Image (tube, rainbow, N blue to C red; front, side, top):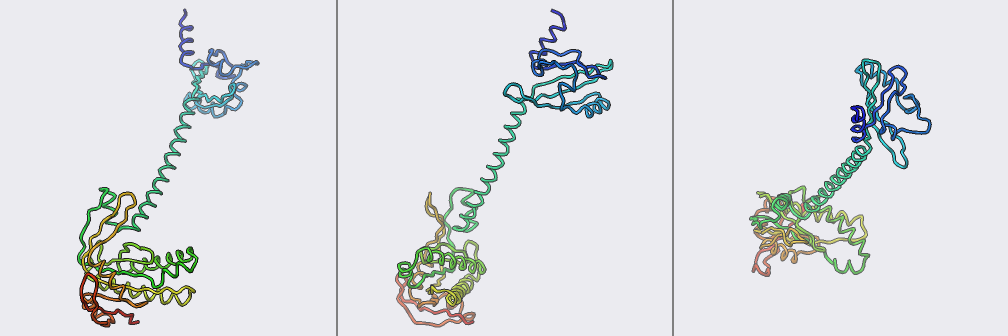
Length: 340
């Protein structure tokens, strides 16, 4: 077997199409079997432009003149499949143009698959990021940021004692009758509006809303970061809650009347539950605020004696006498009024 035949077999084995052309006329002088398999037709054109009418001959000539090489790609139908062929033209010193063709169809398909996969990964990454942000926003609505960061890092939250803090407990007068007599969707919509306004008011004074239970709203000052004037912050928040409802009632058909209890003391905060978890606080200050709220008249704020002594020089307070507070014995109780 001659060297030429061996080279021909090697070229055929690795799937490379080779052709030799006249540099001036671009007529074919040699084409191997692989080349003919890809580009054969009945006419067997003998000139480059006839075989590849879409080839930019001007660009090819410029590239050959500048560097002696020119590369391009062509696509064409072969049976039912579209083939992509990489073409490499090399000019020799003896006026011969060597054309080497490689079938890169599979490479292009893989590149397309990689691009599609990359786009899918990028899209999924954006969706995951968006979902993560939504989850983070949801969790930050039910727990303080420092608690969320601890939960995100360790997967658990260590119960922590906060002492002292001030607690506000609010509920609405006649809420049960309102729910029974009105469209539930209207009631829920109005509650959402009111609680959203309460959240904004509480944020202004550094209060952390803990939870809502039906018509009960609980917020705390001095948690999770210690606040020296937590009693003042909770008092300002309570006054503005009442003020907001009073103004709202002037322009709404449904009249909302609240009762508020304020206390100060210690609480323990932690995440409760495993699957349906929630951040909650427990302790004497929470229980006392709940008891004091029960003594309040509609649109009034009832204050613990210790809180009243802290606030008496800054707020309008009225002693309403001693009350037997369940679990706390006899204590003086005060009414906090809006002086404006």
